[in-house]
Length: 137
Image 1 (cartoon, helix red, strand yellow):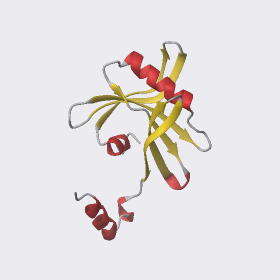
Image 2: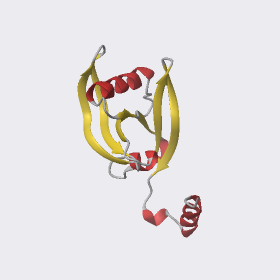
Image 3: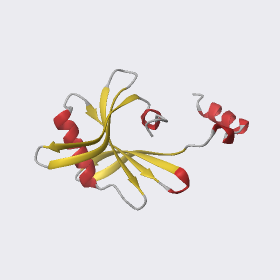
Image 4: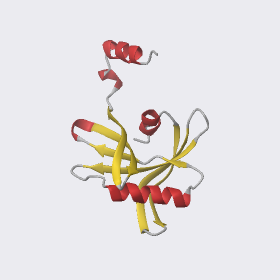
């Protein structure tokens, strides 16, 4: 994800990986581990902190993890806007990214996108034409 800048593409921001496997504490919660923390800025200058939880196989992200990520962000980066992200590594080398929020003690998916990384030799001229049409306003 980091090497291919999927977070940047997914959110439309310039993101920088600040730390992976952040083990810290959150007030009222105790010890918390965040798989990776990014900081980012959008084209308007808004600055974000992006806690990322990555899951593979049958592991699923729970509301508790999203709440803990938000608590860590509030404590460690109070001046940045938190945007929790979940990454699910799926079959057939597909990566699903989810932007999350917590509303009324429930985790809500703000946005979801699936990506499949392929060698450039597998991208056809027809694919490029489709991508070009999709990027036009």
